[in-house]
Length: 102
Image (cartoon, rainbow, N blue to C red; front, side):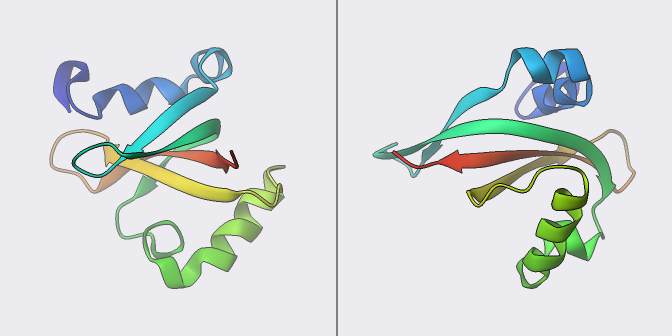
């Protein structure tokens, strides 16, 4: 995480200019990478790791309503990428992306 290692680069998406310049990505799944999904990154913020709305799947409708209130209301499936936001805190950087259908 530190110095941009592993998922540390997710913090860059908290900067609107960076997010706007890096909207597209690919999620590669599995050990062999046989599956992949095109992503459209649309939002990032800091959240507490104990935030059930973001980190527990049974709250997915509540999360979708929250994102809709922020102006993100497409019907696409959504993936949330998360990493520590530093030190010994429970702060997390979360990056939301639409999964684009191929």
